[in-house]
Length: 443
Image (cartoon, rainbow, N blue to C red; front, side):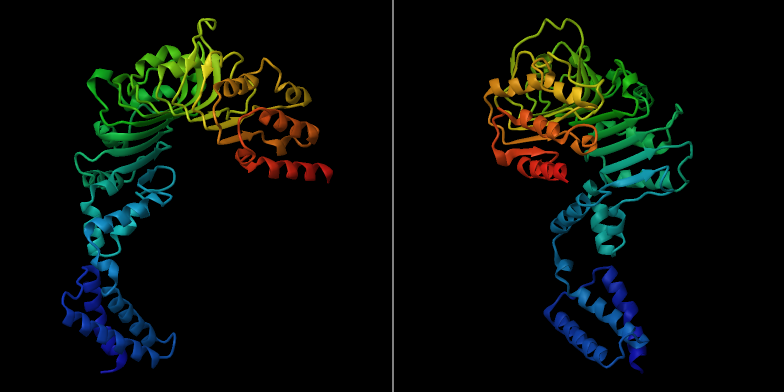
């Protein structure tokens, strides 16, 4: 029998063993396989590189060596941890479906099930690998006939009690839900993390057309509700919040103080709000005493602005102010009255649009919210470890004098209790940024 015929006959048997992880289970069997590997390597040396025989011997040798690979002897628990790490570092860590991008499900988990029967069995038996699901519904186009049953099977693989991480984007205007979303909503009691995006906030009623008392979210710790037109929100009821989930992280486009009594979680640690309307920020910090991270784009007074209270918030570690660069959306003057933050260690500030010289020169007048924020930091006597100023300076170099941009940064950091190595402008060290600004102004 010729060399190529011999290896062609070996290949199907080795392929089956590889797919079923049929590794040699005794020292004698392993020695025999090592001898076959040595013979295959020797035969490969006699073949012309790139020839049909060379390719056939190479394929057999690859399967033989694979059967002795250490990864094939890993305990199930270790292999599952590797799978988890692969998914977490993937751009699509979960199961994804988009009516705009594809006609089928996607996700790195499926690739893991295609390697061999052993990996497939391990992946299918690990419920947590199937617990992250993303559905983006952009159009009127219904999912293909294969998507819904396949997603049903994937949900079943997540078991009956494993917490689910859900991402739903409902960007259509119809009042009906496709089955792929309905299946996720039916398991809302298992949600531990949920990111919901709508064209308009009232669409949340399409997902949950029920009274708050009719369902519960006992596991939900992380909730994000976004809308592309959040200015239309007003005080749209949120059936999820009204069921009082045990939230630790909350992200909303719009929040009114009159609605905060609905959020009963005293354990809330992270709050991200586009626009907060209320009496003062001191009141907001009083309502959520355990906050460690606060992101706020803008603040608008609502109610009796004179009825402020003094709040010493001893949990806040990180404060991120600004982000919406519109002049209309900013933290109104007087918002910081009565606030002290003694444990603050990180501060991020984004300036609004400063269109002309007047805006830049007025940015640090005594009655501006930015000056008030600096006063909060000073009177709090906190030890800041990192301060970052976002000012989009490059966009204004042709509109204002470079020296004015430098002065703006100087005034911002003046008096702040932060060391030089912890001072940044647009995520670049202050010293390096200033050197770059001076160099560009000289050119």
